Length: 484
Image 1 (cartoon, rainbow, N blue to C red):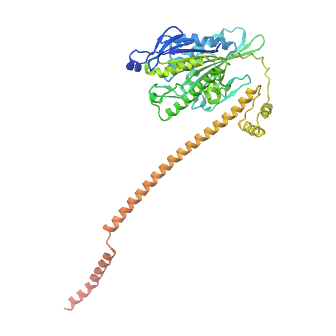
Image 2: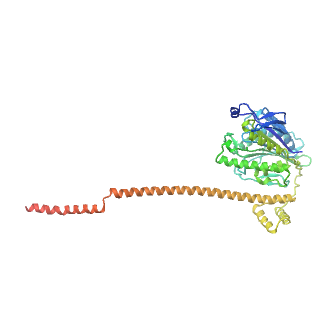
Image 3: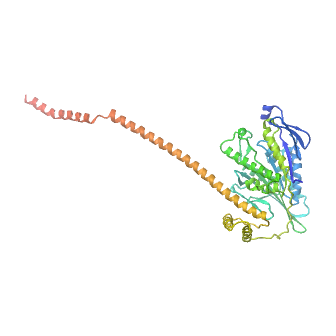
């Protein structure tokens, strides 16, 4: 049985869709799990999912079906993930946050507010636990970098793998939550720091993938065992068609990164469902690495595919529905995280882990490759305790991924530098040309002045001779007059 629950939500028509197509819609409901969908070619396609939320369904319906079972599992140490997927403007963020994280009535509350209330209520009703804590982290993947939305100075967090094989974000800020008001204030602050932008499809389009991470810890009264469960809510940025969103400049660059990461997510889904390859490309993007637990069996996962009901968006909605259909085929066993006795965790020194990795690699690689890998381990500070050949392959892939990422970053930096130098060179050329033109203009003015306004050399000599004659002849003339 699949540990992934797939549901579809059709939002109501918006005003622009009504103006273009009146009240026409592209689906015909059959029951709570199936419907006919009419594509752009007006062909009808039958779709079946675990649950279909039609436009008249409320926020509470979504919460009760998707989130309530996951909250119950998290209290028993089983991780859970809820992902919203779909084109931009399809209602993902509304399903997650409602119209506003703070000021909205009970009917409009999104998954976030309801999950917080559900977790706090479950912890309050726990009578067999000595100590219960709830912590919240909030990060976004923007331009393929992980940013801490509670501390913007942490703008390039790294993904790590723990001893229990769980993926986690190293260094993310954790805020302890004791009541709903405190949680809403923290969430509101984080949401305000999220990257958004205006497109033709959405006035406040999310330009990043956002993750809300709740960590539940409960300590038993009887034996001191600590039960830990994690719930991750993932609000994916919407897939975009440039001709519809009108994206340009920075918005276009963001759209490229968004579409690339969503494409990587699709590749992972395909690899998990086709069974034709043993390699799952989780490391192709930060998004797929974080979702490795959600898709690979270490979490109970719910996928909410958000769609527009309008024929104008039939192509994008069909793509979303097909993505959900592929995800439904994932068949991975659910792995529950065993409870741990306090202070009973085996510790492995980095040096021993480092040596064990290299020793195992020498059995499969040449000595030269292992020496190179050893240098890379030291450069990158990678150390862990391998328990299987898959762990060794994972370490090798991790180093390869980091090298490729470093090279890609270096290439991007060089490209940016080349573009900057090109711009500066063009500016210098323009300035040089302007100086040349100004200099030529001054030279022409000087030549004009010399030729037309200045007397010639010979003219000056002639005038001088005449003046000299006049000066010398005046005394002689006076003498002649006096003698007479």
